[in-house]
Length: 111
Ligand SMILES: [Zn+2]
Image (cartoon, rainbow, N blue to C red; front, side):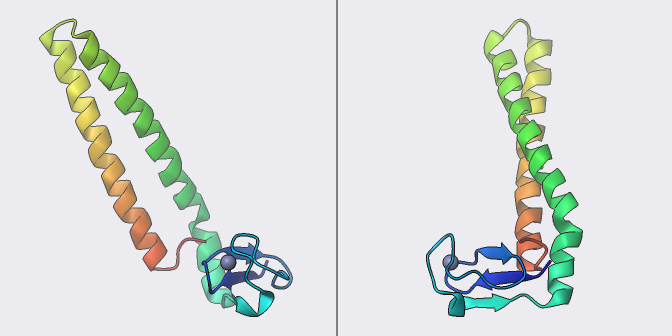
């Protein structure tokens, strides 16, 4: 599948040819440029990993919410220590994921 990038807003359109206007910003089709095939393949190759990163980030958000409930419940110090550790590690991993996604975007592994 060919990919076309809107040079005004970075929206990526997938199809046989550029759309008549950008679905996101309304720019005319002249504002679209085709993404070269090798770069389009890199985007496709990266989709699974990108999706896994986003899924993991969502799960880590849930870990944070569960851990926060445990901290607030405050049953005993050993429980709170575990929940606190879980919350800290979930936050750290989410920051790793955000940084990695930014690397993917800067290297054209996103689209
Ligand atoms: Zn656009």
